[in-house]
Length: 568
Image (cartoon, rainbow, N blue to C red; front, side, top):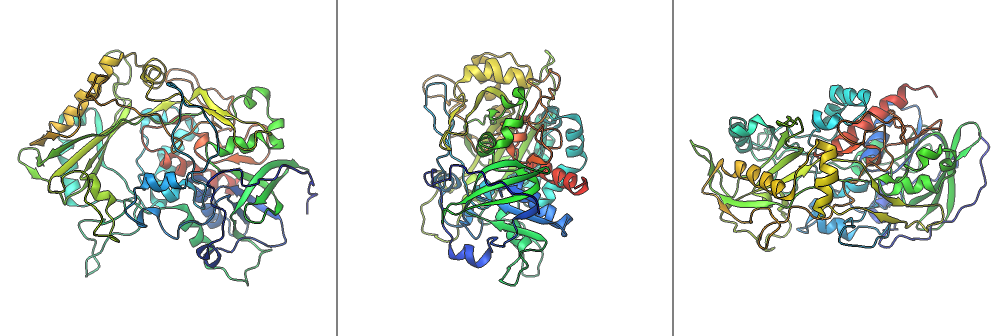
């Protein structure tokens, strides 16, 4: 037993508006919150989302002889994936459970949208299951060892862990084959978009149905992963023994250094107000890009960091700019025609190959996501009388959008300190402020030097290259542009894929050398500490054009391997 500190801190008093603080029947019947007398663990994981949840699950698999504690401020909100509850859109439900964890003042050039969802399973509960691969031109921004191990092993393992789909049926396979034989294949790798599957719908004889889904888009979430790991534990569980333990409704006040290279994880119960500390030699902070740097800032470990690294904590905040959707009615693709009915579905991603143009810079620093009958992915079975989709349900709809990679931005950040009442101010340059993207962000990620007019031409020409492959195209949206009646490409950016606030070794732009002065090292350990790690989106050195969740899942599995093999 190590000597435990008795330092006092400011207790959390439900300072976050809209935070769910309750123990529901589902919670109490499925999850045994840790209430044992032994406060000491081998590893404590703060946060149960994609990073913390996958890490804790894998550690429990690989080290069954160890004691692992997952603490999360959230409650157990849903017993299954949120997409299944009703016909409400995923974004509506996510906003409903968004928690006020920061303040900001909107201006013409500053604003970030959305609020973090603090529940058991983190944002994975509100996530639709999209798990595409980052490409080589994006992975170039990761340190060499990390990049090679992700490519060689951990991205594949991440897809398997998240139940990645192999195919969504014969129609999408036919469409992918068509586009792979089109001129678009010169610039893009074209694949079915990987989705997280629960199980395919089966024919009576047990074989997979041709159409895998009739409702939600994907159902992987880490809340179910951790419940599956702990099992339906009852009162006879050995709380002093080994295994994985969960404690919800536990706000982490601070992570403090204590003697013998141990750490105190100081918590407040958001339901009862009780304060309790837990101790471990290894602590992994996985609370997300907004909460994790705030936690480090109010912890004693912050005071031990070198001054230049202190200045990085909370800054670099970025997201990947995603354009508004371009939509059109179509009847078929190609010649000979592949007919597409309103009952068919496809989700296809065009991964940029990162090919250089005549100027040596990346021509397409974006991926393109294409949906056929996008509404199909939002169907619900519980209320067939619910209104029809806004588009004509008798016609086939295709929509496309462009998702750009983005480097870390040191002008964006979380201005937190130990006495900010848990709600610091945040600064974030709106993506709708196109001048910054064209003059700063896109030059950094791709070497671009492009004015607004040329940028709109590129978007519209690329959009048209895709629509030209279809027959009987009837546009539903105008072209991109800045004039009246045209489609402005970008909104403001959101916290939902925010990253970079506790960065690993990084580089400021495509041609810059790597900077090892980072908050965490290549193994995600905080510089200047003996056993404090970070495993969430905040460590990413770039916001990839692809949904970054697969990169994070790969990093979580890589960190698990490292912790299993590292000496105690």
